[in-house]
Image (cartoon, rainbow, N blue to C red; front, side, top):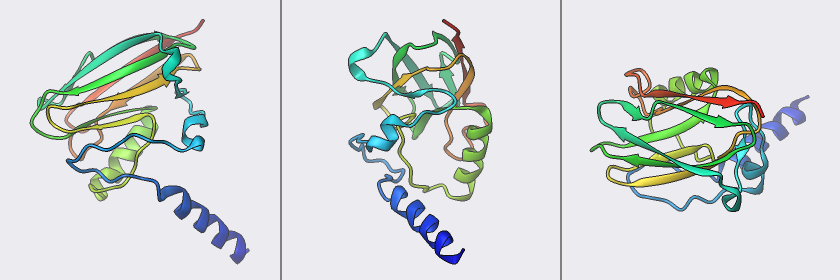
Length: 164
Protein backbone atom coordinates (compact mmCIF):
# COMPACT_ATOMS: atom_id res chain seq x y z
CA UNK A 1 0.00 0.00 0.00
CA UNK A 2 2.84 2.40 0.86
CA UNK A 3 4.54 1.72 -2.47
CA UNK A 4 1.28 2.46 -4.34
CA UNK A 5 0.98 5.78 -2.51
CA UNK A 6 4.62 6.59 -3.32
CA UNK A 7 4.11 5.76 -7.01
CA UNK A 8 0.96 7.91 -7.16
CA UNK A 9 2.76 10.82 -5.47
CA UNK A 10 5.74 10.57 -7.82
CA UNK A 11 3.42 10.46 -10.85
CA UNK A 12 1.63 13.63 -9.72
CA UNK A 13 4.90 15.46 -9.14
CA UNK A 14 6.28 14.32 -12.50
CA UNK A 15 3.16 15.37 -14.41
CA UNK A 16 3.13 18.82 -12.82
CA UNK A 17 6.74 19.73 -13.60
CA UNK A 18 5.90 21.13 -17.04
CA UNK A 19 3.80 23.89 -15.52
CA UNK A 20 4.59 27.53 -15.98
CA UNK A 21 4.21 30.06 -13.18
CA UNK A 22 2.01 33.11 -13.32
CA UNK A 23 4.10 36.11 -14.08
CA UNK A 24 4.39 39.14 -16.27
CA UNK A 25 6.60 37.53 -18.90
CA UNK A 26 4.96 35.96 -21.94
CA UNK A 27 5.69 32.30 -22.48
CA UNK A 28 5.56 29.85 -25.34
CA UNK A 29 2.45 27.72 -25.12
CA UNK A 30 3.70 24.18 -25.54
CA UNK A 31 1.65 21.29 -24.25
CA UNK A 32 2.36 17.62 -23.70
CA UNK A 33 0.69 14.95 -25.83
CA UNK A 34 -1.36 14.03 -22.75
CA UNK A 35 -2.61 17.61 -22.33
CA UNK A 36 -3.54 17.81 -26.01
CA UNK A 37 -5.44 14.52 -26.03
CA UNK A 38 -7.15 14.79 -22.65
CA UNK A 39 -10.96 14.93 -22.87
CA UNK A 40 -12.76 17.15 -20.36
CA UNK A 41 -16.47 17.59 -19.62
CA UNK A 42 -16.26 20.79 -21.67
CA UNK A 43 -14.24 19.38 -24.62
CA UNK A 44 -10.61 19.01 -25.59
CA UNK A 45 -7.73 20.94 -27.11
CA UNK A 46 -8.53 21.72 -30.73
CA UNK A 47 -6.53 21.24 -33.90
CA UNK A 48 -5.42 24.68 -35.20
CA UNK A 49 -5.96 23.41 -38.77
CA UNK A 50 -9.65 22.72 -38.04
CA UNK A 51 -10.72 26.05 -36.53
CA UNK A 52 -14.34 26.86 -37.43
CA UNK A 53 -14.23 30.48 -36.32
CA UNK A 54 -12.52 32.96 -34.05
CA UNK A 55 -14.08 34.64 -31.01
CA UNK A 56 -12.28 37.53 -29.33
CA UNK A 57 -12.74 38.15 -25.63
CA UNK A 58 -11.88 41.61 -24.38
CA UNK A 59 -10.81 41.64 -20.73
CA UNK A 60 -10.69 44.81 -18.67
CA UNK A 61 -9.92 46.01 -15.19
CA UNK A 62 -13.65 46.47 -14.52
CA UNK A 63 -13.54 42.65 -14.04
CA UNK A 64 -15.69 41.77 -17.02
CA UNK A 65 -15.39 39.83 -20.27
CA UNK A 66 -16.86 41.14 -23.49
CA UNK A 67 -18.68 39.10 -24.65
CA UNK A 68 -19.76 37.30 -21.48
CA UNK A 69 -22.03 34.83 -23.29
CA UNK A 70 -21.23 32.84 -26.43
CA UNK A 71 -22.98 30.06 -28.29
CA UNK A 72 -21.15 27.37 -30.23
CA UNK A 73 -22.14 24.09 -31.87
CA UNK A 74 -21.12 20.68 -30.60
CA UNK A 75 -18.04 19.53 -32.51
CA UNK A 76 -17.00 23.08 -33.41
CA UNK A 77 -13.35 24.10 -32.94
CA UNK A 78 -13.00 27.71 -31.81
CA UNK A 79 -9.95 29.96 -31.71
CA UNK A 80 -10.44 32.14 -28.64
CA UNK A 81 -8.38 35.31 -28.67
CA UNK A 82 -8.07 36.70 -25.14
CA UNK A 83 -7.19 40.38 -25.33
CA UNK A 84 -6.23 42.16 -22.11
CA UNK A 85 -7.19 45.82 -22.46
CA UNK A 86 -6.46 46.45 -18.78
CA UNK A 87 -3.44 47.48 -16.76
CA UNK A 88 -3.29 44.33 -14.64
CA UNK A 89 -2.89 40.63 -15.42
CA UNK A 90 -6.02 38.69 -16.42
CA UNK A 91 -6.69 35.17 -17.60
CA UNK A 92 -9.26 33.18 -19.51
CA UNK A 93 -9.96 29.69 -18.15
CA UNK A 94 -12.64 27.44 -19.65
CA UNK A 95 -14.32 24.79 -17.47
CA UNK A 96 -17.33 23.77 -15.47
CA UNK A 97 -18.46 26.12 -12.71
CA UNK A 98 -17.55 23.47 -10.12
CA UNK A 99 -13.97 23.24 -11.46
CA UNK A 100 -13.62 27.02 -11.79
CA UNK A 101 -14.79 27.62 -8.21
CA UNK A 102 -12.36 25.01 -6.87
CA UNK A 103 -9.49 26.49 -8.89
CA UNK A 104 -10.40 30.03 -7.76
CA UNK A 105 -10.16 28.89 -4.12
CA UNK A 106 -6.73 27.40 -4.80
CA UNK A 107 -5.62 30.64 -6.47
CA UNK A 108 -6.58 32.59 -3.33
CA UNK A 109 -4.42 30.28 -1.20
CA UNK A 110 -1.55 30.11 -3.70
CA UNK A 111 -1.62 33.23 -5.93
CA UNK A 112 1.68 32.23 -7.56
CA UNK A 113 0.32 28.78 -8.42
CA UNK A 114 2.04 27.14 -11.37
CA UNK A 115 -0.16 25.79 -14.15
CA UNK A 116 -0.58 25.87 -17.88
CA UNK A 117 -3.18 23.89 -19.77
CA UNK A 118 -4.70 24.18 -23.25
CA UNK A 119 -7.95 25.57 -21.77
CA UNK A 120 -6.16 28.47 -20.03
CA UNK A 121 -4.69 31.74 -21.30
CA UNK A 122 -2.76 33.97 -18.89
CA UNK A 123 -2.62 37.44 -20.48
CA UNK A 124 -0.34 40.32 -19.53
CA UNK A 125 -1.66 43.90 -19.78
CA UNK A 126 -1.93 45.06 -23.40
CA UNK A 127 -1.24 41.55 -24.74
CA UNK A 128 -3.24 38.76 -26.34
CA UNK A 129 -3.13 34.97 -26.00
CA UNK A 130 -5.05 32.22 -27.78
CA UNK A 131 -6.89 29.06 -26.83
CA UNK A 132 -7.93 26.60 -29.53
CA UNK A 133 -10.72 24.43 -28.16
CA UNK A 134 -13.07 21.82 -29.56
CA UNK A 135 -16.45 21.47 -27.88
CA UNK A 136 -17.14 17.74 -28.08
CA UNK A 137 -20.19 17.72 -25.81
CA UNK A 138 -23.39 19.76 -25.73
CA UNK A 139 -24.25 21.67 -22.57
CA UNK A 140 -23.64 24.84 -20.62
CA UNK A 141 -20.06 25.56 -19.61
CA UNK A 142 -18.25 28.51 -18.14
CA UNK A 143 -15.15 30.66 -18.38
CA UNK A 144 -13.55 32.95 -15.84
CA UNK A 145 -10.51 34.88 -14.71
CA UNK A 146 -9.20 32.99 -11.70
CA UNK A 147 -6.59 35.48 -10.53
CA UNK A 148 -7.33 36.05 -6.83
CA UNK A 149 -10.30 38.41 -6.44
CA UNK A 150 -11.22 38.60 -10.15
CA UNK A 151 -13.61 35.62 -10.11
CA UNK A 152 -15.26 36.93 -6.93
CA UNK A 153 -15.66 40.37 -8.56
CA UNK A 154 -17.73 38.78 -11.34
CA UNK A 155 -15.16 38.14 -14.07
CA UNK A 156 -17.06 35.13 -15.42
CA UNK A 157 -18.96 34.15 -18.55
CA UNK A 158 -21.08 31.39 -20.09
CA UNK A 159 -20.58 29.10 -23.10
CA UNK A 160 -23.69 27.41 -24.48
CA UNK A 161 -22.86 24.43 -26.66
CA UNK A 162 -25.81 23.44 -28.87
CA UNK A 163 -26.22 19.76 -29.76
CA UNK A 164 -25.61 18.80 -33.39
